Length: 99
Image 1 (tube, helix red, strand yellow):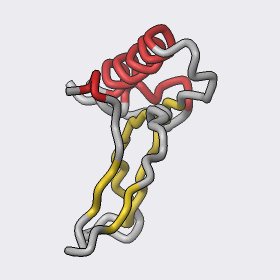
Image 2 (cartoon, rainbow, N blue to C red):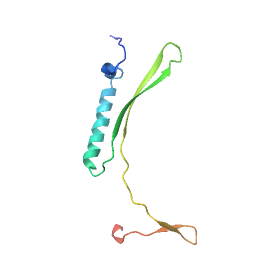
Image 3 (cartoon, one colour):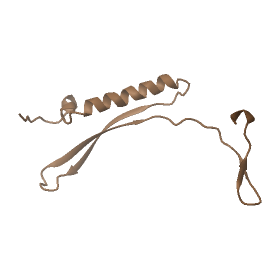
């Protein structure tokens, strides 16, 4: 049986059955990232976005697509200096222990 409700923050979870689960998974992943990389003090971000478009068949209606996303900071990797060779290739120095 189908029900109708006015869309609000209180009932956003009713918009899509997977929305609450997906949001929880994204939030959990952000928390896990904080635990795994505590020295990285930058913010993690979890977002719920609603994409709203005019309905193609009825100008009085719209389509709503909920999307969850997460941003985690990229790992900081040291800059490596490279030199161009006479054959126009790149060479760089590295520690022997990496072999």
